Structures are given as structure tokens and as C-alpha cells.
Amino acid sequence: MQVLLARIHGNKILSRIHLIMIAFLKIALSIYFLFVLNAAFTQNIAGTKKIKIIKKDEGFILLRGNKPYFIKGAGGTSYTDRLVKYGGNSIRTWDTENGEEVLNKANTLGLTVTMGLDVARERHGFNYDDPTAVKKQLEKLRLEVRKYKNYPALLIWGIGNELNLEYKNPEVWDAVNDIAKMIHEEDPNHPVTTMLAGINKKEIDFIKDKCPQLDLLSVQVYGGLASVPQQLRSAGWDGPYMVTEWGPTGHWESMQTPWKASIEETSSQKAAVYKSRYEASIKQDIHCIGSYVFLWGQKQERTPTWYGLFTEKGEESEVVDVMQYLWTAKWPKNRAPHVDSLLLNNKKASDIIYLQSGSNYPVQVFANDPNNDKLTERWELLPESTDIKNGGDSESRPEIIAESIKYTNFNNAILKTPQKEGAYRLFLYISDGHNKVATANIPFYVNNK
Image (cartoon, rainbow, N blue to C red; front, side, top):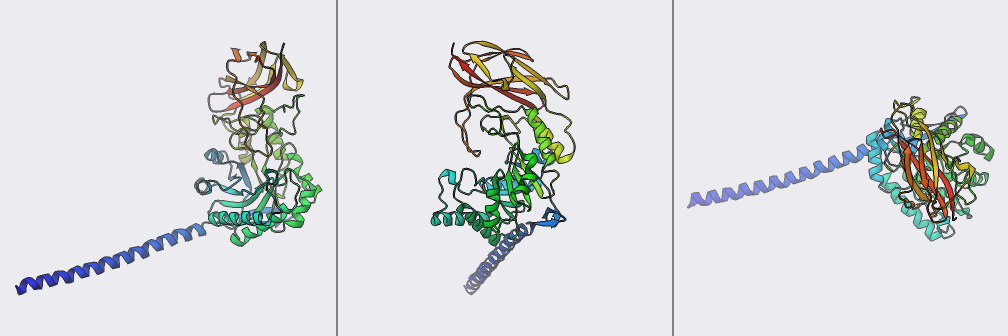
């Protein structure tokens, strides 16, 4: 009996020892995981490179980790793997939606991000004379800055987008300055800018007077890109800047038909102006720290092809080839098809085309491929878009009118016009079979017989 009691007593002691050991093990594991998490957080902060802009001679240089960094960027978060492949180094967003995913993917690919902060616009009904609403917006943005400020891919903060578009209240610039000041308090490692629609001396004067917290200016210019350096000097801006949107001739700058349909450049015409305007301004202006071409993706804005460098299927236009050349000084081995012209009833778009309803008309295509690839065509007939917005706001795509094109051969087709009177647009997509495409369209008006 005494031996049995001794064994029981001994087992109790061992159990207590085991419990003590387990408790110590739990504490040790907790300390270890806290150390690992802290190390990971510290590493994330350590991975954040100080971004600053310095004056050099008569111009400016952006430094990332004390190394010169010229922005070869694109607006949008689509096809970022291709952006890297073609020589781009940065992307630009308009808000922080999916910010963590965007920043992490960019970092994995070696890209940086100019992160947009979605600031309310007067044209959408926001009142900058309402101090409560302005303060609420500031604190909302503060949380976004705190959330993303330590991500290694972050390059620059962008306050709003085209806040000067259709605005009247200059109090917006006081709000912009307060946001910039808040960002500097929360995040001393990244410069701050705001994006202006066009270049106007009135806005430049407001920025200089009301927004001393901004580190640089950002402008968004299309047809006038080649003259941006001169425009900025004339408006009194001698500081650093970047062009955060640039691209084809804008729909508001283009020739219009009597029924108010803007005439769009072909993809080949766009390629030519992208190249010439970039080389005349962004490439050579020592005040410019880089740019973001618009749009590295596809969107419906007036038409499905006006601003995107890609089609809805992800095909690459001739403009993508140009961007690769501008970023790397090398053309791709496989070049996109080149379209010389598209004629409807033996007329080009600028001839202003009126047709009769329910009738057949000839269509002619003149195109070639630099690599002599076999080319194929696809056609779409759409009603002219009536969902017209401003400032890049979301628009709906018109529905395709089926069975309107009859093929004859590559260079020729027959268009059968709709019975309903109104404005229409004929779209052409020319594919080389290797994901490269040329695009063209031609607006016309159908009259009833």
C-alpha cells in the first residue's frame, strides 16, 4: 500500500512538472511569434524607400532610395506583367480600392505605385464650404494613408483627380493643402501631388498660393502634350511636375460631325501622336520627373477604343509598341498591324457621311502588317453612344447591331444600314493572329428614305 501511494504521489509531481513545462512552452511560443510578427512589420517598414524630389541644375530629379528614378508609368492596374516586360516601371491608381493587392503585386513585379486618394468633386455635388463634410473626408483619407504608407511599392500620393474640372469654389484647394499636410504628418517618406485637368494659370496661381504642402504638380493633357513645358512656364509654374494622364487626341479636341459625334483617330494615327508628343515634352523637359500613359487597359469612353491601349479581348494596339520603344529604345519583334485608312461609301470620317436607311454601301480597308502576318478582320456596328459623361466617369457600352456587315474579301465589305434613323458608328478590328490589333471606326448618320 505504501509503495502504491508513493507511486501515485510521484505521478502527481510529474504531472505538475509537465503542466509547468507546457505553460513555459506556450509562453516561449508566444514570445517567438511576437518576435516574428514584429520582425516582419519592421522588415516591411525597412523595405519602404525614402522618396524625395531634389533640384539639379535647372531641373528636378525624383530619388527613390537615393537613386534617380524616372517614371515610365501607365494608368491602370491591368496587364501589369506586360508593363514590366515592355519597360514600364510604375502604375497609377485613382483610389485605394484593392490597395493591398495592387501594392503587393506591384512590389512582386518590381513596379511602383502612385496611389490615388479619392477626393470628392464639386461637380458630383460635394460642398467645400461644409466644414463638417471636409473634416470627415480628411479623417477618412488619414486612415487610408496610415493603412498603406509602409508598403515598399508606394511612390507618390495623388490627392484627387481633376478637382478643377467644372468647379467654382476655390476652397477645394484649401482642403487639398490640409490633406497634403496630413499626409506629411502621417508619412514623411512619400511626396504628395494633385492631378489637374489641363493647364490653366488660374489654377496654377491657386496651387502656388493655397497649396504650399504639395511637393509637385501633376497635369493631365492630351492633344496639347507637346506644348506642356511651354504652357507650364507661361502659367508661372517652375517647379517639378509629372504628367499623370496623356494619350490620343481627346474627344473634346477632335473634329465633330454636325450630329456631335467626335471623330476618333485610328490606332496607327494614335501611335504616331503618342510618340511625337512624348518626345517633344516628357522625354526632354528637365522639370518633368515622368509620366503615366492613359489607359493601360480598356474602357468605354465615347467609344470602346478611344483611350485604351488594349481591346476588350486584351489585344495590344500599335500604341503599345510605341510605348515599348519610348521606354526601352527598342521596338518589339512582332509589331502590330498598321491601318492606313477606312472608307465608307468611298468617304473618310472627316467627309461627314450621311446614308439612307436599309441600304447597302461599300466599305474599303487599307492596312498592312510589318511582319507580313496574315491579317483577319472583325466588324461591329454600334449606335452612337448616348451615355455621355465627363472626366472619365463610367459610361455604358452601346449594344452591337447584328448582321450588318457582309464580307467580300479582306479589303472590301458591304454595310447594310439600319432601318432606324439616327447616328451610328462602324468599328473595325484587324488582328495579326498574335494578340496584336489595329483599330479604326467611322461615324455616319442614317436618314429615312
